[in-house]
Length: 280
Ligand code: PAF
Image (cartoon, rainbow, N blue to C red; front, side, top):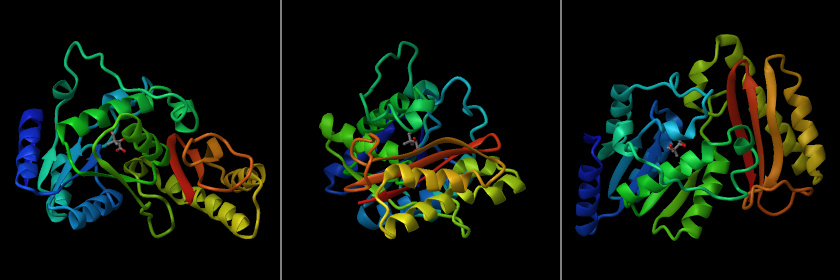
């Protein structure tokens, strides 16, 4: 497995593989890999000849008061996980390699980024779209693999690929959970033992909503109330948002029908966690 921070070396290698007729996958990450990332790597490995993992904590997608400096980093550990997963190349650039001193080329989008996480993280999705665009140019893979935990990110990237004619297939992969149901996240490492125990409430509140929907509830307001009531039973949980939206447009809906995204963001102590259910 090769590890490089060079855009040129990475692009040349991917072009060489493609010229030899090999299929190439990209798994974009910010590192501190967990089983969720590993599941993306495994799927990419199964479906392609070559797998590239990018590891880059992208400063552009963090707001001024967010956790950029605290975000966990451990390249040696990540490299071991990638090696075990059969990854061929890790692209691990410095910030200066990605964003030169005169950088001013952003990729942005209307409507999809405005709600949910975009409402409380105003610069986040512009940063995600910009870095993912750059990664797609640096690593012109056939397929790119993203987790469904970041459902709004997945919807935005799918839309971006259609609207801007990227020649890459976007594969959304299921959320991987701890045994008690908490969605795996690099940010779970911030939780104290007490917070970790209470964080399971996110998944439980979504289970309660799905139970109601399976029993015939279609009123989005009632579904949101079930989630809110469940979350409010947890003393450490502070709701950022509870939303029922169209999965395609990320706009709120009144009736649960068609492709639906039920998405929540909740602070457990000072750690902001997200989770969701997608109904297709
Ligand atoms: O999901 C992530 O880890 C990041 O948002 C991504 C897609 C790697 C872009 O920095």
